[in-house]
Length: 376
Image (cartoon, rainbow, N blue to C red; front, top):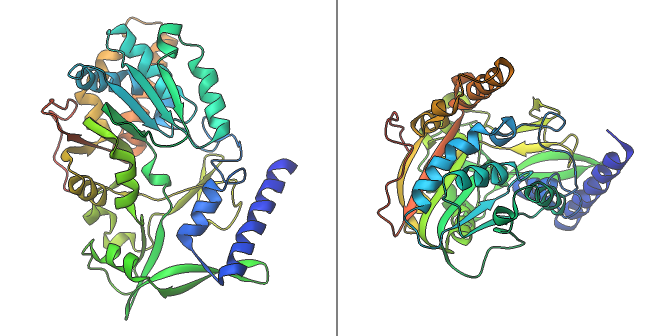
């Protein structure tokens, strides 16, 4: 860890400590929000190398072009039914997906009218702009960066890959008296956990999940997901929302075998379960409750039409058709290796799920024709 990174982490930890001193204790969700998003200091805000082999983790688009090229079949089918379609991507990483997707959509003559990237990290925005600038001008000029959600409504697609898992979570544990909330206090310069009753609004959000969990069970949930999701999707007048992330339906997520929850940290491609170390310099995520996501979208007027494994989704969209069997061995081997990482059960294939929901449209949603059925 360089001196600069150590200094950023030290300043962030001091800021968290000051927040605790002012309030007596802070929720884990507040801590996670600061650790990841505190301006200029948090993991996603401080300009640290995050993606790729030199970073802390690799996302599907960073493996190669197959992920975006395959999803282009989905995007093209939806966009073809809209007169002036817009794609809005949340948290676009290094801009790799946008770059690869637009190149592929150009080849099938199905470019959108505009491609919006909502990015909160100034560092990532700069990286994205450098990437997109390499596209031909007739493509690159369609890309626009947003600092906040758009005021105007549009028709098209809202897309997020590994966005929901990075939303701050409340950590809860079941006691004889009911669920309690994880709070953090400061004891002689060290973060210490303590449990407190939930505020009524959060207790009601947890109760709405109708979970039947034993005493001692510990897990997480995204607080205020309803208001967050409404803010994101209310600008979509007609079209489709597509989420790709790792997670489960509620029955699987809150299974008795997961009694310690799913919170995990990543640093230099190594997973650990200590969020209180390397604060601001390691990623922190939690598995997504897709039942909760689907319920929220349904309440916002969307038709949740599809939920499946990433492997089934990509295979239904024609992933194997993109493999060039006549390519040079090195290129062919690279494509096969990439495909395996995307679809094998012990890689991304079953860990990652895909949820699609549509609004004010009868458009056929491709990619789910031959999938197994998964319970939400």
